[in-house]
Length: 163
Image (cartoon, rainbow, N blue to C red; front, side, top):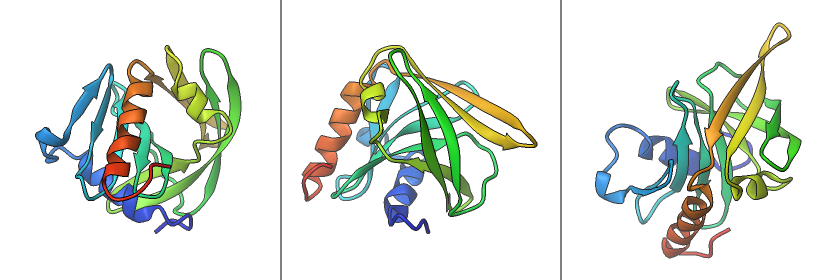
């Protein structure tokens, strides 16, 4: 479980993103989907054609971004990332979290990420692969602002204020 205490919400998010998730819980906004049970974690996410996921997960108390580029990482370890959008480029720190058979990175929405997600266009994330190499994933932001707002609202309706 991650040291940031968001493991339960991320676990629910990964399960919600699995193929068996209930279709009636999903809402589409552009290239983004909002899903999750009324009493659990709510996700707003998008994917690349290669299957990498990016989005945010909200529970009753907070929201964080997550990124699953389908690479190996060490649970609990922090990794650097470079994030670029139409109007800003900035460095971020991602924390590797293991949830069942999945590995994902958690990123705080502060430091410009929430603002970048509110823009149109694309969001790019560059991340280390090892041996001096980097990977890169690009995600559509079409519908991200609406999906993020809806995820926060649904999480708030689940019993507490949206973060």
